[in-house]
Length: 300
Image 1 (cartoon, rainbow, N blue to C red):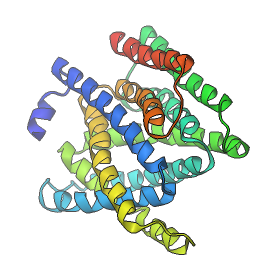
Image 2: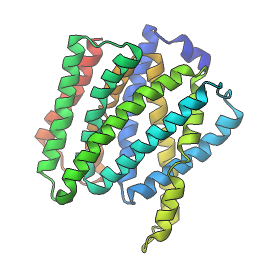
Image 3: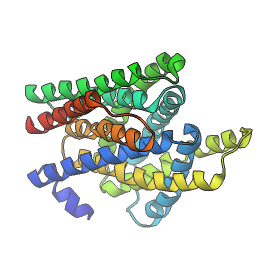
Image 4: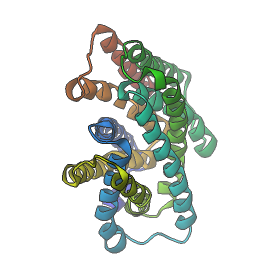
């Protein structure tokens, strides 16, 4: 399968597959965010998810895929640091603010700086029409965040801090998207990068999450938390793996923009699973997000 994927790099078939992978990643990323925000403390949820995907990735990394070349270990070290910063900021943002406000701000900040980073690192250039699409998409995403903020009744006192953390988290989204794309392109086999990424990345938060769980007065039952971790780990494999393969097959910036249609899926999930309301204004803003993604794709 690795040889087949590599053969599609830079081809029209590769472009189409990258688009489908990025859209799949958008839906799955919204599911992943809802799993982390849901009924449990975000730190505990993230620790359970990370531990689960590290355990699942270990046998693949150690016994299935080719081992990384020596040039990959410094890359993995920096990937570890970048993702640790992202996870800490994201968990703090979710702790301080409402998911339906924080998530759009995080995801809206990411694509703009990813497009800039892809230009600096890979020489990718967006056409004027694609920049228009980015503007339309960002207008929809930030409009959704502002609308959700105006209708918010809980966590209002902590929202300024949550919004600041969300912007910083978005910057780290751009940083990890561009650098991970560099990493998966540097690996001889893309699945080597993915397997070792999940193994290394999953070692960060579980010890901290365990200590946090142990010190809580009202500890959540470990069974449901671990089940959430396993489900989240499987979603993470599919979501992150999809977008990373898309960045190897085609342009990093386009994959990043398409992934941010996750905000539309997040709004739907918030409505169905978290009890949020979806009125005509939200529908219009979500249509803007979708239109922006279509413009970016059509303008390429």
